[in-house]
Image 1 (cartoon, rainbow, N blue to C red):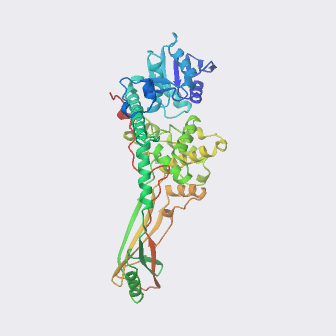
Image 2: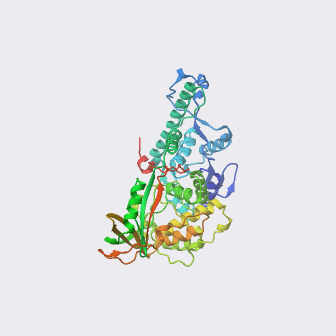
Image 3: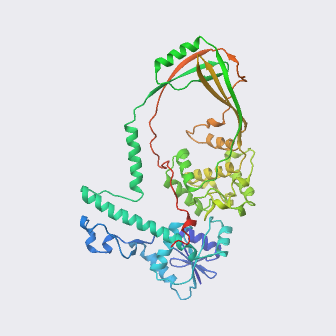
Length: 491
């Protein structure tokens, strides 16, 4: 018998159905030479401080810092029953091999390894590493199981993260709580994030708007604007001077420009767009995407890659066709599939970008929860955009001189809406969505350097500087993510 351990019961059932383990037992499934069970998330974790010394049950300054010599793991009280099932299965005499089928990421590795070690298991270990729950992907994964030792570095990275959280959380929380006589929770991630938010709010609170003034001139067929001016009287003086003079075209610059399609989604960029367009929190987006993964409609969510591998190029046109057929806003639109734009083996580590699966064909998407359907549409849109034609346009920048001052205007003529046509069609179906102004034609008339233009009007427009924006749930600052490939083989 070979034992497969998944992270959740729903995933275990999907895997078992593919490999033929269909007989239900107490806490596992069995059949065709396989047993399949599950962990129910984190069955065990690092023990609390009082597990090392009963005196640590009280928070005292003199006990700090608390630095365990040998780390202890404990099983959650509400999960002991399933742990006992796994321990019995792992050590069963007829089990010859254990397959780690927990989520193919850092936390999934730690969940399995913790149970494996606490159960005292010494059976050979293999790793199921897949990016999709499609039946074909599962079969391929089981046909190419990898040695568990290949992921020792990934386990070490996850354990290091857990210990760092423990050390900072236990010691810093106790220190500040004792010093300030109130419970102050301090965390490795929580505290610096909170500091960023507090700093931004302080900047907003102390911000004082500064007025500025801009002179605009109405010319035949277009409007030009001058530079911002801090002095209102000077702006009024320039406006008056312009009213009695002609404008002369000083410079005309015409350029052909092209805007390439956006890259596919990784988890972070998807969370940002889902927050901006749909109002979802980062956790909501992850939860919806995880559910779509388990329903075999999207690929693995926790990825930091925005590209696909070369072996996926052949099947990509069919996936694009199926995806377009499942999206109402793409009906009747001309679609392209430039696979080379999304294929890059060097930029894929353990998981490729988030994309929909071929299970979209025939799936009843109307039965999906609203949040899951919205995230699926966003993922599908990005796939279609990423392989679409570039957005191309001709841009004209004109500089006009009047009364000794320079004024500028820009215009564009769209030649091919390309991927932005898909994006605009999607936005049109969103509530309260702002139109994409980049796709609008803003043409300038034919102009020649040295040409004299009459004014039909001049005005002074007043504006004010604006404060920094409040952070949303998806904080917009650059963050460095762990690269799983760098964790492999780490000591």
